[in-house]
Length: 317
Image 1 (cartoon, rainbow, N blue to C red):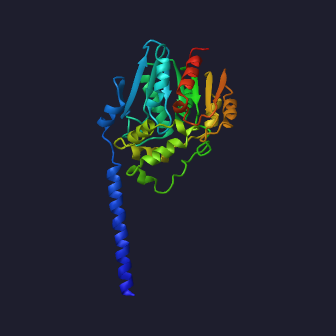
Image 2 (tube, one colour):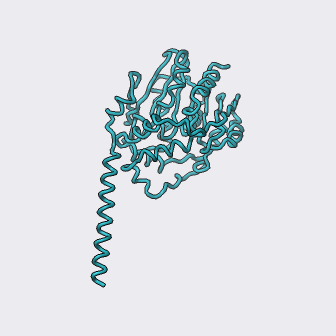
Image 3 (cartoon, rainbow, N blue to C red):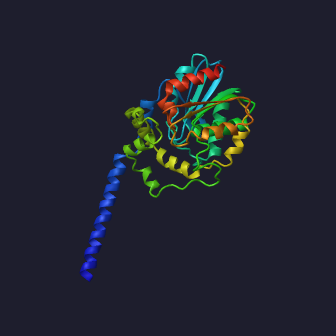
């Protein structure tokens, strides 16, 4: 009996040692990438940084400086790079501002450790104010759409037009909830081991036409996710995210709104588009455009079509 227990102890000890070695190897392979390395690859001459309430925010301010201002808010897990086609379509007439939210892109972690919706909206307000913008139009996709809604409700006198593209506000996991959604067991390991296949799966799950998912986009997400401190910050964001009574917020939006929705959206299905537009009861003008075969990642799947429709909307056509 003692011999059997002794050998069992050896086996268990060996398994623990193998797991620890495997974890150490995985953590080394998927280690953080220095900020300066990612800035050299994904930044450009338009990349600037501003410190807002202790958080160092990466942003770009492009186009006609005295033109009508448009603020673009990216999706969860994404970055300001997703808006490149829209900026190209707008910058000849508009001043186009976009920034990486905390725990995203080249911005990275917030020293405060606060990634709540309230904090994100506050940083958006400070970003707009820091550039001296008094009248703006906004476009937000997925989580960015939720931020745009909150901003527009707080500042109805400042938002002239708004585009909500595949908004995530009605996602049943968070809609109306006052507690964050539970995370799967082992989520904390992703702060150390983040395989490229995981990012590919995350992106693929949002595409209507998976053939449009490029290796370049997968690598971009995978590398930016591994900015120093980014993964831990993102896990903290997921643990803090509460949408609250988003239906009531949508009902009080007073700006004209263009709603864009992918008909193959697996995250927030297209049948919710009518629900969403009906909730915009205080808006003087609501238009809905749906895109056949397009999923939740419409800015990536249909960049030319969505940016052309955005330009027509902002131009008042």
